[in-house]
Length: 218
Image (cartoon, rainbow, N blue to C red; front, top):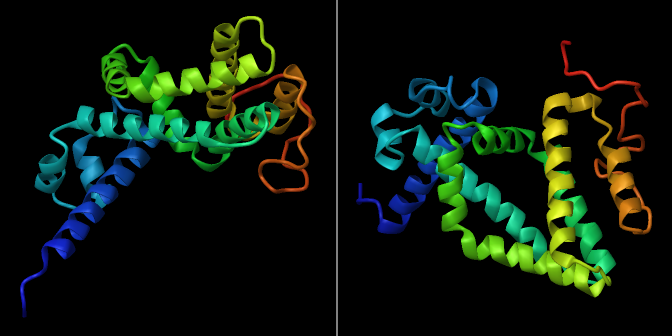
């Protein structure tokens, strides 16, 4: 049998890294970063412990890579085109769609961003991604300026705070959180035309109105 080519070896290495990262994300989402162990990630990925430590010496490096990808996903949303209103609506929908499509990622990111022991890891990723984050901020500020905002910087911070708050609540309350109604409320806040259909593609796409939010099992 002829030896594998360098291209095949690189493909196999990339597959292994992706398998490890997917396993880490699943375990972090289920157990929390602090309760997750490398042994559990090893078992979930179906690889040896040595292979994991070859790519990622510890949990912190795994968290760093997952957070880096999370910020990359947010940065990609600023590339939408159209009028200021169309771009703003697309950014709002992009963030809220991520809640529906990648809840484990959102839960993991919030956990790592807010816990005191992993906050430095998040700060390190922010520093590494500073150019991208500034591009996100500048894009939103330019968008709000084009819409005639008196203080575009404040509007940028406000929008991000609102969307991050929605992400947090949606990860806590899961299926009971009225995501679609919240989406329409945010559209109304910015005088955007009502969305044409639900994010989920379902005809209903939202639970019936409730008087109080309660976490599942409460």
